[in-house]
Image 1 (cartoon, rainbow, N blue to C red):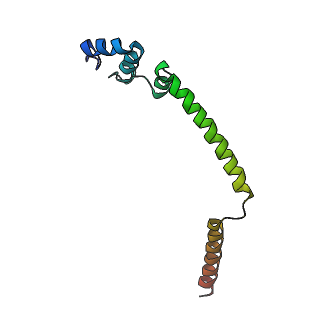
Image 2: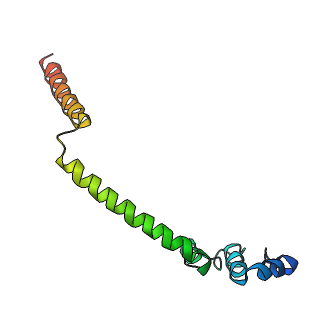
Image 3: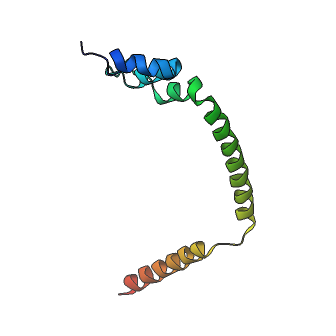
Length: 102
């Protein structure tokens, strides 16, 4: 069995700063992958509460912006890229016809 990454004086020092952070770091840095905290569990830790709230607000705003952009795009005429693809398909058909004639 290997010694934990955070132990002894380091653990005491971190615990004196913030006990919850110490537990989070110990879970994140566990050498046994089966016992290591996954990303979701880490993000749900109380140390990230304030950041989670801010990120959720940003996510909601971004989602609203994306929904608006999608609806605006649906109203636009065929894009230049689509026109290029249509021209390319037409050229491919012409090439196929020319090859068949030869």
